Length: 145
Image (cartoon, rainbow, N blue to C red):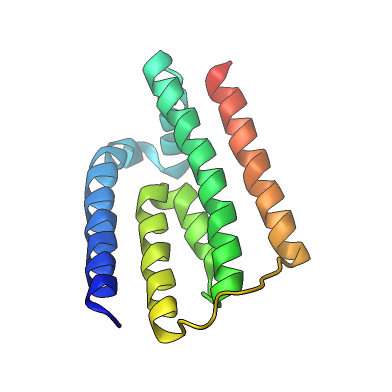
């Protein structure tokens, strides 16, 4: 592993830690009444004003693009458990799990630099990405209406 790769991994780790602390420092306020009530309150407040709607929809579409990238890179490089990173993006924060995926990706590249050619998606990958797209579109519609 090169020094550049170690530095990049450290950077991604710092991003993941900072993102977890800052997002969950806010999200924890919603859990006083249980998980379902937390999601309901969070979703309703995401609709509160044009700024919250804009950033919520923006993050949703970033999650969709990042999901496609993560699945393709995972298949190309052999990174395991890619769907856990994506699920974590919905349940924890995409800023956390995308940074964690980038660490796993960089570690895989460091171990096998020659691996990087052809890749293919499975039917379950395509179905999973379609479900992510449907979830993002549904949440965007909910937030914008």
